[in-house]
Length: 525
Image 1 (cartoon, helix red, strand yellow):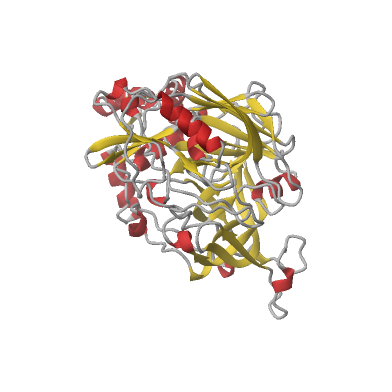
Image 2 (cartoon, rainbow, N blue to C red; image 1 turned 120 degrees about the horizontal axis):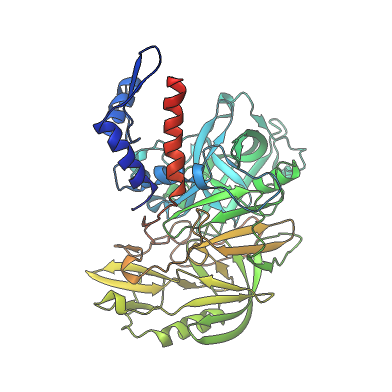
């Protein structure tokens, strides 16, 4: 990972070898040893101060690079085109695809007074934000259950001085007929298409902590409505979104709708899906003038991020078609119904030279191939979608690679659906996706999530892969979508394992160094 950190570590190593010594006019001498944030002296100092066995991320682990990427975000995650205030979560705008939690994109959200952080899955395919709360039946909060050193939180209204229950007469209470005459609290229940998967409880109002996306990082306290999820069922108990689901849909209940209605941000937000599994989310981001765009197909009764596809290009094959699809960050794969599914899969198959693998009931994909012994000789047909209006949406990661029985296999990561088309995470990867609800358009631009144009292609020998066949996250192996209100599409686990090959700009290195020098000089002078 040749980066700013290599240069910075070189600078710091000099200070370790030769203590930085300065002498002022009074003859006093000041000496400082500078250390990397994960160095042994820093670890020892923090352990002594905290008095606990603090768990440091292992070098080379996802936590290690996520922490460094977060520093990059603070220094470099600026410059998006917008004249209006943009906000993100107080814990940072970084998002991360977590393998042990269904490969969905997660981020930290802080709620209540005092604040409590929740690791929530980001989902543009649903509206309600809910967290486990005063649990009757919730997923385990034990870190050992999910393979990382982080105990998950449970919200308790009694522990937050700013919590309020949403009454039955609230305009946001859609289940008034089910309100209790005694309690008078507004209940909710959201059923998801995945078999027996749901969340239910009561609606709450409390403070969610945000920060401005500028150099000041001003804290913004937003009053939001969310679900106190007392009972979870199905996939939510099996590792998919165990600490809550953050609905980003169009309904007035969603957090983006609440933020724009309160005048805190423009009615738009963006999500960047990095090819290394790390991305970011920003509320109020309207994108840039040079992005591709297509209008949403809005249905007044239940608006979703639905777009029209008017053509598909696979390699040199041009396919004239016309279908609508939902843009859903909560679905790891892309689902297509016929005739679009047959068009794209058979065209892809016709251009692949590698031997096709026989069907496997463990794998939801129909078109899988043995990778050539010389991986660099494997040629993957390119795919792009022509959107309504003519803009081209390039798909940078149309395949997944897995190791099965000591052989590498790659599959076209498109699942056949019965009646619903969904553009999932794998097709969104490599882009910053802008959900401009004000103009009712979807925007996209090739992006690496660090304000750098991604001009490099990923060679086959660096493709992400897994050693296990896909398993369900929020959806069952047999996909049976239903387009009903308060019901979202099923979701399958993506098997893309994050790789970390991002190289930041060199300029931020000097910012770090100037900061260290500033601290030294401030003490000396």
